Length: 274
Ligand code: LER
Ligand code: MN
Image (cartoon, rainbow, N blue to C red; front, side, top):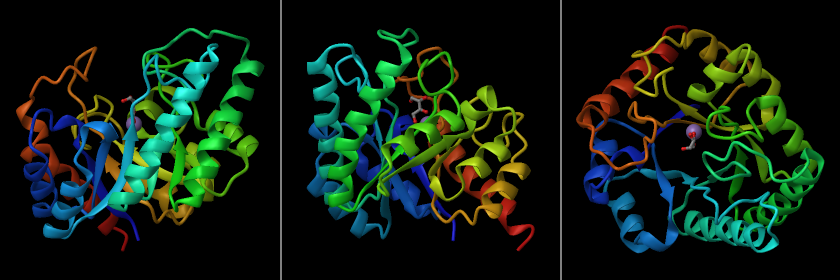
């Protein structure tokens, strides 16, 4: 059974109770939280999730130059693994089942060492974090990002190659339809390629707005998810149309309007063939 959640990153500047209450009101099963464990009140979050009868789905971890799993600097690689472990502790506390991961800093588009060396750092770091995650009942999901945000893992086949090399049940693949629309030949085929290793999926249209507001055809996405018997979360990760969408500017339509519209769109999509 597919479940729906929404990434609260776009609810910039809002108090967390308002965000959780909104998602509960519009019928979401879960909430995806930003991976800044030090800045979040996990006790309050847990209370609010219970108050509004909604689950924590996942943690969207944030990778920057200080948290880079394949940095050429050993202390930065170590810092990245410690950061993922702190997200695991946060996830376990609030009951989230997964943490998204890409091995490098967001917006890093140049490699620091040859691919083979960087790949071996990725395997080493994610194996350590993934083992810790598995021991705490949490899964790590490797997310390909488009070429303008990252150079290392851009397509599902690369995520799968890394996941196979890590070889842990607690580490799988994830997709994001916004990135996939840019990098994959066929989004449905990429989902089928991951198969039972697809642990999580971010949903946004081609312009990162609510599904239905861009030009992605979500029918093949639905078909592929059905083909692999996907039963995880579909998490809306919607972001404003800025070059730097993380700048905290409040965009009104991403609050009530897109939150409601997205779940209505996806529930209709999946209802049609039922
Ligand atoms: C994160 O899930 C993502 O998709 C990237 O674009 C960085 O936010
Ligand atoms: Mn994403």
